[in-house]
Every structure is written in C-alpha cells, then in structure tokens.
Image 1 (tube, helix red, strand yellow):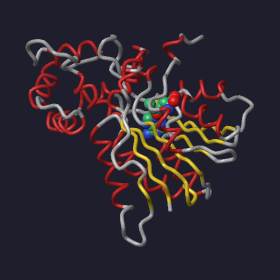
Image 2: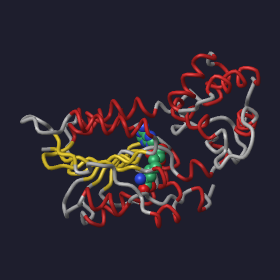
Image 3: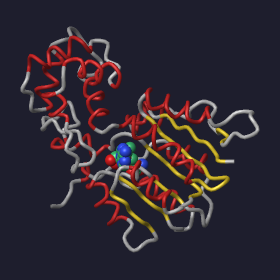
Length: 294
Ligand SMILES: C[S@@+](CC[C@H](N)C(=O)[O-])C[C@H]1O[C@@H](n2cnc3c(N)ncnc32)[C@H](O)[C@@H]1O
C-alpha cells in the first residue's frame, strides 16, 4: 500500500543545534538510536561523506521507510528497541564517534489514526511504537488496577487530577477507542482549555505502553560505552522526566573530579527558537543535551 505524505513526513527538530554540537566530520561513524524517518541521519551522513552509519528504530513503518531511503548506501538498519539493539552493539565491541537519541514519537505516529496515539483522531487504543509488542493502551486502560492507573497518570502524565480520571476510567470500562477515552477524561474538566484536557492522560499511558523512561535510563550507560574517546552523545527529550534522567546521568559522570568520564557541552539544554516552533510545533518542548566522552 502506498503511504501518504503525512504518513512518512517528519521534520527533524533542533537540526542546526544537533549539527553544531555533534559536529560531524568526514569519516566519522554515527549511531542513531531513534532514526525515525532519517532526517537527522541524512544531514549527518552528508557531513561524514557517506561514512557507515547504524540506524535503529522499534517501529516497522519507520524501518521500512529507512530501508528504501538509504538503500545501497553504507547504512545498517536495525529493527529493535534501542536498549536491546545497543546491548548487542556493545557485545560486538562496536564504537562510534557520534550517537543521537531523539526520543518520543514521530509525526507519522500522531498522524495515523490507527496507531492510536492521537487524541483528535478516532482510532483503536493502541499507542505501541513497536507493533509486535503485546502490551497496548487498551490493555492498560481496561485491565490495570485503579492505583496503577493513578500512578501512571500522576508519574508519567504529571496529571494533577489522576485520581478522578482513574476512577472515571474504571467506571467507563470497557474503553476501546481514543475518542471514548478522550471524552471520559474531558468530562472530568470544565471550562476552556488551551490544550485538550486528555493530553496528559494520553502522554502518561503512551509512556507506560512503551516503557519510555525505563528504556532511556538503562540505555544511557550503554550509549556511553559505545562512544570512542572524543565521541559525542546527544539526547533530545520532550518530557521533563526524560530530561531529568538525561541531566542526572550526565551530571553523575562529569564535573571536576579527576576520573570523570564526560564533559557536558550544554550547561543548559539547547531549545528551539521561535521560528522553528512556528514551523514545527513539535519542537516546542524539545530539549537537547550533549556530552563528550573524555
Ligand atoms: C522523534 S522520532 C525520531 C525522528 C528522527 N530523528 C528523524 O529525524 O526522522 C522518534 C523515533 O524513535 C523511535 N523510538 C522511540 N523510542 C524508541 C526505543 N526505545 N527504541 C527504538 N526506537 C524508539 C520511534 O519509533 C520514532 O520513530
């Protein structure tokens, strides 16, 4: 089936800053652990003069797209989650000059209703980045205990009305579609809202379905072990909890002690300017942190 533009179109965020901090040079090797639709990878490839790259994504639509975009070039494409893929690369003693993790979902995830990520488009409650995984949003919403729902909404969604929403979900079961869930959550709020009142709920459930925070926390030390001396690791996060994990991981391994492993290049995270935010609203919450291995 041919894919429409919105099903494959993704504008890479903070591209200028990524190139500035990762500073790709000819004949440097690159590992992209969230390659998506290859926007960052392609810009880096043009600076490394087509030197070999490894691209990882857990989403089969992305992988299919990457395989055709980079066909016949020195590019290895791995369909896996980045934690497992990185463990295997480390077991094979692979080393890279640059590693990039651009976390979260891609625009096509949000544009394809059947993937179940979008509040505004009706679809099945799915939200899996890896379509072969068994845990779905529908399973969480319909089978998790009220206290587990509260924890997910509060911790991952940072939703102040977690209790109330969790109770409404319990009463609303069975809930099968994104619109049904969005409606149940919206009923717990009154008045005008700039963003849809179910935004935090959807975010919390999505993070739980894909174990997004656990994957990053466990993968960072492996990414550092995959860097050559002088190698750069860039991580773009879209969520304060993710950013906190990255900030702490970098801080724990840098500083003035003689045996620190890293130098942090971004004392404060690099963010999008207003021009980028206007042309690509996804960039609004993007934060880039970069560290160099000593
Ligand atoms: C924001 S997009 C990346 C876009 C990419 N930088 C580009 O320029 O096209 C994030 C991608 O990471 C993938 N992803 C998120 N978490 C992942 C994980 N734990 N393992 C592998 N891929 C992951 C998603 O499937 C998605 O395609």
